Image (cartoon, rainbow, N blue to C red; front, side, top):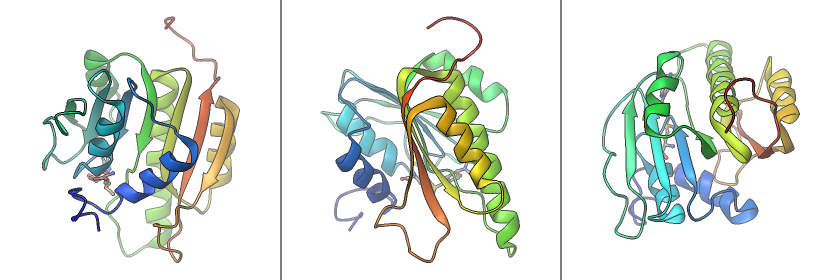
Amino acid sequence: MAKQDNYPARSVYKLEEVQKKYGILKKGNKVLDLGCQPGSWSMYAAGIVGASGQVVGVDLTDVMIGRPASSAGSAIRFICADIMMPETITLIKAIQSRFDIVLSDIAPRTTSSKWADQQRSLALSIQTHAVAVELLKSGGNYYCKVFEGEGFKDFFDAVRRDFRVAKIVKPQSSRKESREVFVLGIDYIGSRTGEPE
Ligand SMILES: C[S@@+](CC[C@H](N)C(=O)[O-])C[C@H]1O[C@@H](n2cnc3c(N)ncnc32)[C@H](O)[C@@H]1O
């Protein structure tokens, strides 16, 4: 289905579904897409935010994006970097200092240990939350994939403190047997320290 719609990955439906229900992406938005390759979420977001918006995608691998999504969409700027490295924030800020929404579909490379995979996913998610706290505008949104398991509740509680509304979402397009869920934060209210917006 994703191929028919010209998206490189079926994961696009996990964003489309939440967009249809909650309208988290809006025309003109500045979007940060963490773990963006092969580019479906960035392409989908670029189509919604349009030419007045911007999408910045970050990933360890650089397979395909970094080109305009479509004539009607915004240009996608791509940064090849590890979100666990502190200097990645500096690279992002060099393009855009504040975002309306931070997306993360980041997934660790899986191993034979389900526990280790879940813990790695959690560590990546905690980092995407830290990036969101640093870069979101007041009132901004956050949508992040994470594997449920040990430590998940503390992560969700931290997100809950920073957003007016926080939800755990399991899109229909996510396999039922998978421990993957998405944490949605709507309306950033967290008190970031540092420079004003
Ligand atoms: C499921 S894919 C994302 C699919 C994407 N949302 C799409 O729709 O095309 C997960 C991505 O997370 C990236 N990733 C994993 N660890 C990362 C890290 N530490 N920093 C940046 N990207 C990372 C992987 O390289 C992979 O491309």
